[in-house]
Length: 246
Image 1 (cartoon, rainbow, N blue to C red):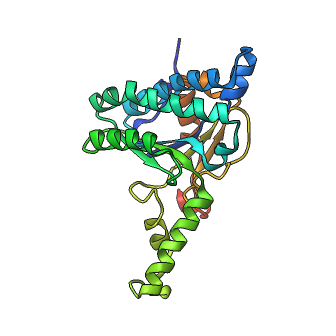
Image 2: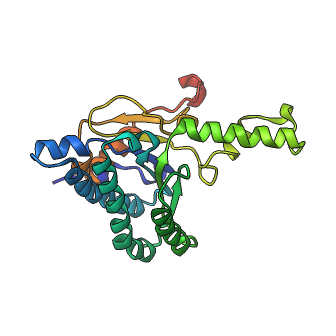
């Protein structure tokens, strides 16, 4: 049986892929189970996609893991998800390190201290790894990130460290929490929803968007390969004409 992987052009891979992992709750409902069961099975998809990205040589994979808006979900679900994140990290940290994966976390400071401490430990453990950088957006929202960048820039202007006339796209990008990596060339959203949900709004200005009806727990390596093949079939013009690009 042929695989979409066979159609991938290795020298045309995106450097950075971002994914809005959606559909855990609906997947669980289809199984007649609680939403947390969907989150538990979504971990398998994270593992599959991380392995596939690393094997292909993709440099950055950013996963929308938990938004600032998700704190408004039922308390039982949020607490269960936080426990799941900690236990999963405890299980996966050494494996990530052994596979030369570097872990990075982006988001605000509202994570409980005990959870943040666990993630800090894993970040430090994998800091010098040179393979795939796996970025988890945790308690993250793009409007928070942009607001935070504006505050930092305003403070530098106020203190005289920065001239307001010098503010440009590069300055703004440098104050984003994603300043250690390039903008994503490809953004994938699962579950059949067609919205961005406050994710990397600044960074996806020229990203290719790929939507699939597949619910996140069912999303595997072959689904990622299919998205990459679709991405490689597109003409990326960045505002230019087809003739200029060619």
